[in-house]
Amino acid sequence: MDLKALKKQESKRKISKGYMWAFFCAIFWGIWYLPGTVVWVLNPFDEMSSAIAKTSGDGISLVVTAVLITAFNALAVMLALMIWNGVLGKYGELIRTLKEFHPCSKWFFLASIFGGPMAILGSFIAMGFIGGAFSAVAGLLYPVVGSILAYYWYGEKISKRAAIGIAVIVLGGISIYGGGLLNELSSGNVPWIGYLGGLMAAAGWGIEGAIAGKGLDIAEPDAGLTLRFLGENIIWWIIIVPVLALVGFPMYSFALKAFEPLTLLILIFAGITFGFCYVTWYKSFPLIGVGRGQGIGNLYGLCAIIFIFLFFGTAPDWTIIIGGALCIAGSFIMFTEDASELETLRGE
Image (cartoon, rainbow, N blue to C red; front, side, top):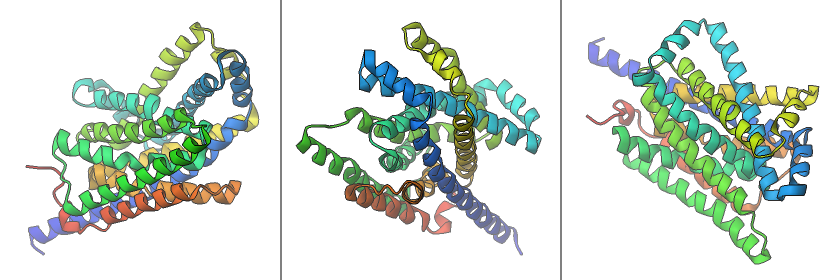
């Protein structure tokens, strides 16, 4: 077998492995919406929302509660990733990556800003204001953002098939948001903050993927991902939670109440599922590119709807189902791209 044939065989192997990681990402991500939905009705978060609503209103109470939930989610993921890196024997690599701030770790800390306070917080806000099914499907627009940024930022190619897939995903997004808005405008009760949360999730995860792809050019995915969540925990526990406590919100008193057995179990479940969702997501980027990794990971929307229906018996509105189906169809258009199109991901 000549060198060219060996190179092509290795390229196909890497592409297959990248698709496998992205598919596992979709499964773990879809499962995450179960604990993400349940945690809202557990103490102390349901009690916190009611207490703050009495003085600040329902909207502010749900947003502040979402902040604390997101902070605990980040902490649970960080603990899961530290165990994961320990099992793999990668603490040394983690320290080396952290020390290389300028060429490497700065990208993961920057990704944490868009992935945490923007994407994950937005997703929890959408869950709290509208529901888990909407939150899951609303974020399906994120591959559009990620693909476009990866193209303009570092020349990651977008083929005709990938562009068609992006267009179909956009149509799905119009259905997801437009249908719900039309129904609620007629009733005069529109949960604008919930829709904003969905847009935050889509934009944040798309931007994060493009930024992380830059860092993953030279970093090991498991180490880079752990630094990304280290950055998010710093943002929540060192900056945002203390600031909210200083302005009068009971952040610490309710945070201490979260150490109840059932609440801890749900948070650990969220940390494991979301942590491994991110592990597989980051591993797919260097193999098949940001746009395609996000496109296949987009199947999480279908997984989430199925899991939410099976466990909670909640069926989403028909506009969300149609929009989700279009987003998933767009992902499949990207997924079925010929392998030869993926052999060179970046422009010359």
